[in-house]
Image (cartoon, chains in turn blue, brown):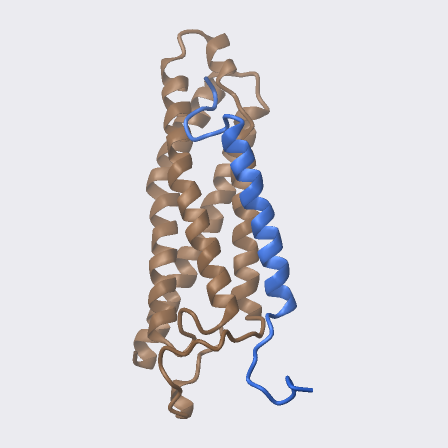
Length: 44
Length: 175
């Protein structure tokens, strides 16, 4: 009831999905970096 | 920003962004050719091509896309922080450009390894799926950014750096 007509903006669902996917990608990248897959380390 | 400059900026942004996608597609094909052959000459040629392709097309186009996108958002009513789709697209662009600049070290390394491989077997040994994986991931990311810029999904952050004056001529140009 209190929220009715207020200026509080809800985060769109698509933004939440992008945020979750983005966070997962960042976690994967950190794991890959910790596992030794960094720049210049390929093809040795 | 006048309509003339706004349109000119949009042309630069679309051209650099779409050109970036095309250049990544080229990189993907070259990387796939290198990975799928047993011919040492082709492997050497592919990795020698990937490095300048990165420095002279991917990097300039990515930076042009980022810079022109910033100008477009700051110079129009879309704003930099007013719409979620602009923020998400900017984040993706910064991320892709950053990863590309870091990955250029790998392409430099692969190019040097292909150039200095003393034998055909050594050249074949340079092959790695890494450039193909990175190119495929970049294409996926850039296509998502393209879809965002075409569909412009709704959602305002509530942040207004410049209050709307209500003039219809200042409304965002949908592309």
